[in-house]
Image 1 (spheres, rainbow, N blue to C red):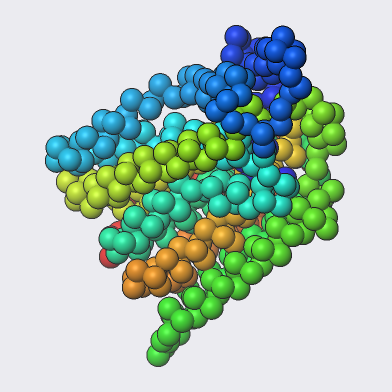
Image 2: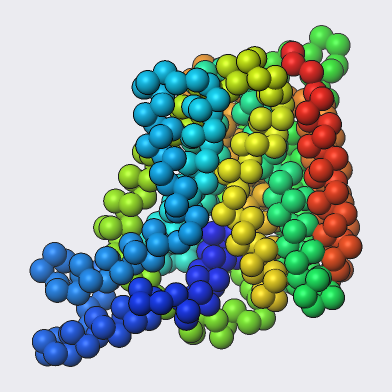
Amino acid sequence: MLPKTARRSVNASKAASAGPFTPAESTKSSRSLEAALGEAPKSGSEDSLQDPTFFARNSSALVGVFLVPINILLVFAPIGIISTYLECSSLILFFGNFIAIIPLAQVLGDATEALAAHTGQIIGGLLNATFGNAVEMIMCIQAIKRGLIQVVQGNLMGSILSNLLLVLGMAIWAAGIRNREAKFNSAGAQANMSCQILASISIALPTMYSSVEGAKDILTISRICAFNLVLVYGLFLFFQLKTHSHLFQDEGDGAEEEEEEQSQMSASVACALLACTTLVISACSEGLVDSIEDVSVEYGLPKAFIGLILLPIIGNACEHSTAVTCAYKGMMDLALGVAVGSSTQIALFVVPVAVLFGWAYDQPMDLNFRGFDSIAMMLSVFLCSQVLQHGHANWLHGAMLMATYVLIAIVAWFIPED
C-alpha cells in the first residue's frame, strides 16, 4: 500500500468522532436532500454546478481538510511570502516559510487523496507517487536552480534516513509500548527493503567511483543510473499494485475498506485545491531556499544539518504523525506503508528525478553524494532490514532506530563546509 493512501484508513476512523462536519453525516444529508427532491444520488462523475448537493458535499469536504489543529500554522504562509518581498531578516524568512510548509504538506496530501478516490488503483497510485513527496521535489527543484547541490543531496538523503530511522522507529516504539510486540507482513516490508538496497547501491557506486584516480564523466554515469532507478520504480509500482498486491495488504484492510466513506470532494475541486496548494508551497519553498545561505553564514547553522535534518522534518511531518497513529492503533502494515514506502518512493523516484532536473537546468546534480551520506544510508538500510525480516518487532527495536538517527544528526552538525 502506498504511503499517502494509508492515511485514508486513519481518516475514516477519525471521521466517527469529528463532529458536525463528518463525511458520513454529509453523505446522509446529501441523500436526504436528493430523496426530498425525488432524485437518485449522483456519482462523482456527474457532479455539476446545477446539482444542489455539489456545493454542500464539497463545502463539507473542504471544512474537513482545513478544520484540523495543525492548519493553525497556515498563518505563517502569508507571513513567509510577504517577508520575501519586504526583504526581512534571513531568520524570519527561513523560519516563517519553514513552519508554513508543514500544514501545506497536510493539505496537499488530503487533496491528493481526494483526487485519487475518483481514479482507478493504478492511476491513484501514480498520483500518490507524484504528489506524495511533492514538497521534497519542489524544494529540490528550487535549490537545484540556485546551484545548491549539496543542500539538495542532503535533503534527499535526510528524507530517506528520517523515514527509515525516525518515523519507522517511532512507529515501532509506539506499537511496542501498547501491544508489547508489533506484528506485520514481512514479505511486503522485505520487498520495499530490497528496493532500498538497490537505491543505496546506485548512490554508493558513483560516490566510490569519484574517488578513483582519473575518474571522469560522473554526471553521465549518474544520469544513466537515474534512468535505471525510474525504470525499477515503475516495475515496483506494477509489482505492488498489480501482480503482488496481496503482499502489501493488512489483514484488516478488507473490513476497513468496507467501512471507508467515499471521498465527498469532487475531482474538479480536488484539482483546484491541489494546484493552489502547489503554487503556495512553491512560493514558500523559494523563500526558504533563498534564505539558506544567509542563515548558514549569519547564524552558524551548518548547511549539512539544514539539508540532512531540518528540511526533511518539514517535508515528512504529516507522515510522521500518520505512521505513529497507525502503529499505536495496531495497523502496523499501514505504518510501514507510510514510513518504508515513502522512503522507497524518494530513493527510486525523487532522487533520480532530481538528477534529471539538474540536467534540464544545466546544474551538476549527480549521485556523487558525500561519503558520509552514502555510508549512513547503507548502514541504515542494513539495520532496518534486520529489524523487519522476522515480521515482528518490539519497542527496543524502535528505540535503536531512533538512537541511530540521533547519532547521524549529531555528526551532521559537525560536518565542515566545503
